[in-house]
Image (tube, rainbow, N blue to C red):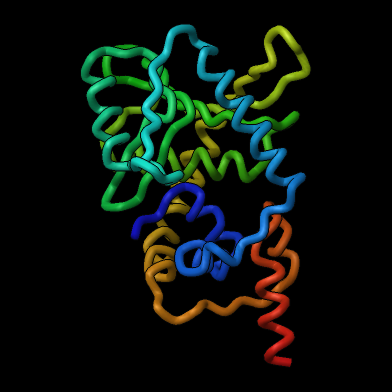
Length: 223
């Protein structure tokens, strides 16, 4: 197993959510409106790939599955970096099983880069900075020199909706939180015993949990 950015964020929100993702993913129920928002966000991210001009994309899937081929994506990223590409989308890095795919990795000069996390949102939310902080942690561990970390939100301009906000200082600060928690979450994800957690505010903030039906039924059995 490995810990991705999504794993980390979901584990910080609720440890049981992370465990269920790893051990009982078939129990998740994604509401239709949530899926529509996710699809819309992916479309916005795809359009943002060209915000710096020509780009290459790293995304690869394991044949006949919906799962990313992370190893192939990491190797492909390195080839693009070595070849001098300036804009690499879904640029992928792995540090001892801790994986991330950066929405846009933009070359500043030589081997100095900026990274951009793209969100289909009218504002920059704290969880977006945390996302970027996780990625900054992985890239630092992989020896990538970052000159800036940015969150791109959906600006109200049809012709130019991509508004980058410099969150370098905040993201690097959050990277310390990553360092303090990631190994704990890695062990939790590997646990054979089901993780228990009380239901409450964490079930909906900052993201809606897709296992509420499962947890409600489990709670009813124990009452």
